[in-house]
Amino acid sequence: MFAFEAKAKYDAWAKTASEYAGREGDARARYVEIARSVGYTGAEEGEEAEGGKKKSGGTGMGVGVSVMAPPEAYEG
Image (cartoon, rainbow, N blue to C red; front, side):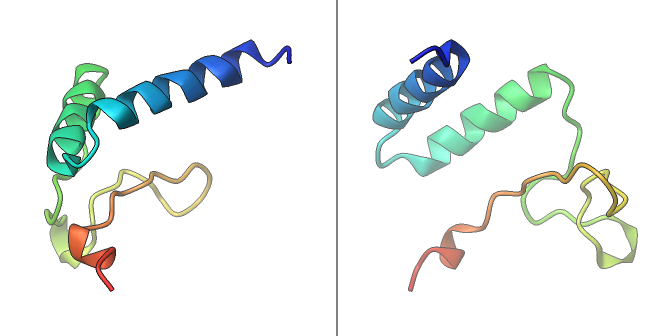
Protein backbone atom coordinates (compact mmCIF):
# COMPACT_ATOMS: atom_id res chain seq x y z
CA MET A 1 0.00 0.00 0.00
CA PHE A 2 2.78 2.45 0.91
CA ALA A 3 5.40 0.98 -1.40
CA PHE A 4 5.28 3.89 -3.83
CA GLU A 5 8.68 3.15 -5.35
CA ALA A 6 7.82 -0.51 -5.97
CA LYS A 7 4.51 0.43 -7.60
CA ALA A 8 6.22 3.00 -9.84
CA LYS A 9 8.80 0.42 -10.93
CA TYR A 10 6.09 -2.17 -11.62
CA ASP A 11 4.04 0.33 -13.61
CA ALA A 12 7.10 1.33 -15.67
CA TRP A 13 7.96 -2.32 -16.45
CA ALA A 14 4.33 -3.10 -17.34
CA LYS A 15 4.14 -0.09 -19.68
CA THR A 16 7.41 -1.03 -21.36
CA ALA A 17 6.35 -4.68 -21.72
CA SER A 18 3.17 -3.62 -23.53
CA GLU A 19 5.07 -1.20 -25.79
CA TYR A 20 7.61 -3.84 -26.87
CA ALA A 21 5.34 -6.92 -26.91
CA GLY A 22 6.69 -9.33 -29.52
CA ARG A 23 9.66 -7.07 -30.35
CA GLU A 24 12.39 -8.37 -28.06
CA GLY A 25 15.18 -7.12 -30.34
CA ASP A 26 13.86 -3.56 -30.18
CA ALA A 27 13.49 -3.81 -26.40
CA ARG A 28 17.06 -5.10 -26.06
CA ALA A 29 18.41 -2.28 -28.27
CA ARG A 30 16.56 0.34 -26.21
CA TYR A 31 17.86 -1.20 -22.96
CA VAL A 32 21.45 -1.04 -24.22
CA GLU A 33 20.92 2.54 -25.41
CA ILE A 34 19.69 3.58 -21.95
CA ALA A 35 22.49 1.66 -20.20
CA ARG A 36 25.12 3.38 -22.32
CA SER A 37 23.57 6.78 -21.66
CA VAL A 38 24.26 6.26 -17.95
CA GLY A 39 27.82 5.03 -18.45
CA TYR A 40 27.64 1.27 -19.14
CA THR A 41 30.66 0.17 -21.14
CA GLY A 42 30.39 -3.63 -20.92
CA ALA A 43 30.62 -6.20 -23.67
CA GLU A 44 28.12 -6.55 -26.48
CA GLU A 45 26.24 -9.81 -26.79
CA GLY A 46 28.71 -12.50 -27.83
CA GLU A 47 31.77 -10.27 -27.28
CA GLU A 48 34.47 -11.75 -25.10
CA ALA A 49 37.35 -10.32 -23.15
CA GLU A 50 40.89 -11.66 -23.31
CA GLY A 51 41.14 -15.27 -22.17
CA GLY A 52 37.69 -16.18 -23.50
CA LYS A 53 35.77 -14.83 -20.52
CA LYS A 54 32.78 -12.57 -20.89
CA LYS A 55 33.39 -8.93 -20.05
CA SER A 56 31.34 -8.01 -17.02
CA GLY A 57 33.65 -5.79 -15.04
CA GLY A 58 33.08 -7.93 -11.96
CA THR A 59 35.61 -9.87 -9.94
CA GLY A 60 33.29 -12.65 -8.86
CA MET A 61 32.96 -11.08 -5.43
CA GLY A 62 30.18 -8.72 -4.41
CA VAL A 63 27.73 -7.21 -6.85
CA GLY A 64 26.95 -9.29 -9.94
CA VAL A 65 25.97 -8.01 -13.35
CA SER A 66 23.03 -9.60 -15.14
CA VAL A 67 23.54 -10.66 -18.74
CA MET A 68 20.72 -11.23 -21.20
CA ALA A 69 20.53 -14.82 -22.41
CA PRO A 70 20.69 -15.35 -26.17
CA PRO A 71 17.26 -16.01 -27.78
CA GLU A 72 18.07 -19.68 -28.43
CA ALA A 73 18.29 -20.23 -24.65
CA TYR A 74 14.51 -19.70 -24.46
CA GLU A 75 13.61 -22.07 -27.26
CA GLY A 76 12.80 -25.55 -26.07
